[in-house]
Image 1 (cartoon, rainbow, N blue to C red):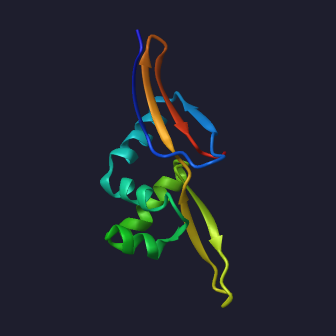
Image 2 (cartoon, rainbow, N blue to C red):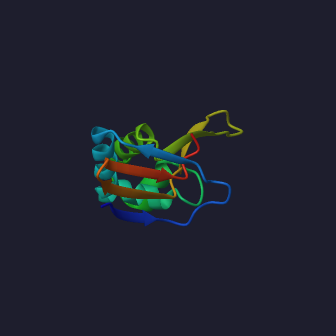
Image 3 (cartoon, helix red, strand yellow):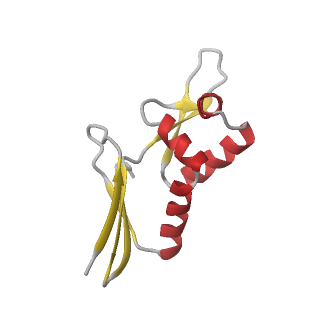
Length: 121
């Protein structure tokens, strides 16, 4: 018997990559990040357009030190992608965009499996 819990957000056009995670520690890390209100807030605001860390701080109304920790965690987990914002002044800045459109957690006879949908890896 297999039970599935799924949560998804609107999928971006052309974003149909899927990653399957089976490692218990990776599943735990991903679920912990998705359970964190600040991480969820960062993921919500970075879904439509790439944002700088300062933009994320302003939109999420969280301290910059917290934002940088959450951003780093989400990038490390593959839930945010980092790009470079080119400026005419020559002072380029990192920008971040959510690269996940949904997750599905399945628990069955073969163990636990987490599918991450929308990550272009």
